[in-house]
Length: 469
Image 1 (spheres, helix red, strand yellow):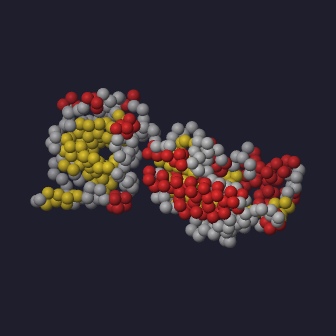
Image 2: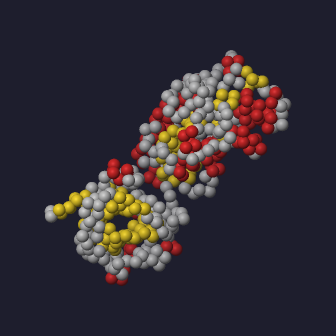
């Protein structure tokens, strides 16, 4: 078979999700040929994942009919032919609806194929002296073989039409002994780790990811952000994502000596350790930010606004955001006035209404509530949709309100009178108290998260549902 020279670089989708066949430009003359077998910039522009290969392997096959596979490895592969020609067969052995899907093609030196983790790879040589090459994004080791998933080359359900019948082909005894598809345990996806799993947002993430085996939850006892052992005790190669729902949030206590140290340890130092892991292992890192990174001097805050924190808590959150921003795969989810399971402003107001107490509530700090149910749903949407990495504001929708307005809504929904709530200024409310400075305007612009396909519920609807539950 003659290699076709000077084809344009191109990509062709296949029936297996994530498996893409590439045409490679090969330039030749009477002396031989040359090709760019792997060119990161051009390949990424064409849509190839930036899978960060770390090892290059070559399988040399002396005879026609040499057949190897079907092996699904726990890493991604970029496969091409250096010399000769092969018939390739790929079978999806990952958990999910595409399990068992088959794709076959003949490849020569002018083609390459990207095979994601968990897709079975097999080939049969169609010429003598064929060299089959592949880039992988993890280092091979004997221990890694225990994570392989195998399928028999002769599996009847895959029904691969081998050009050279397997009875006449060169196979290893190991490959002959692999199980049929009915006996294959699908390769599980890489795991997501949720930190701070017992906090308000952590509990909402538990609810939304309940029953998903690939999502792990760790509370402080199971992953102490202040302990170096927590970061070294996991095999991070088995993870794809970390959702950091843990934080030091005691705004007023952060202004004390001990609180300041604790806030910097959890909100900055721990975040830096997570960022280092995310960069080293190419993980997606989801981090929760706060309206406190701003001084509240604007009517509404968008994601491009420069940090202007007023107090220690806001300073540590801003520093943490800056650290996370250098992680290639990151989502910073910026929220305000978080409400979830546990003690919070809404529950306090509902309790006061029930007991007939008429509170004085700050009326010159304006923003929107962020219910943890919606934050969790927004995080899941960003991860599932493959939204562009970066910072996203995420609160509930509706006109910004003061704390006094929200308290009045709670009283009304609880069957009491709105007039039971008296508005006071923040200066009056905090007079004589040891309190951190707070932004007067915390409203977040939601245009970017909406453009990414996620529309948070209206605050009033979310509040009503929350009180009913």
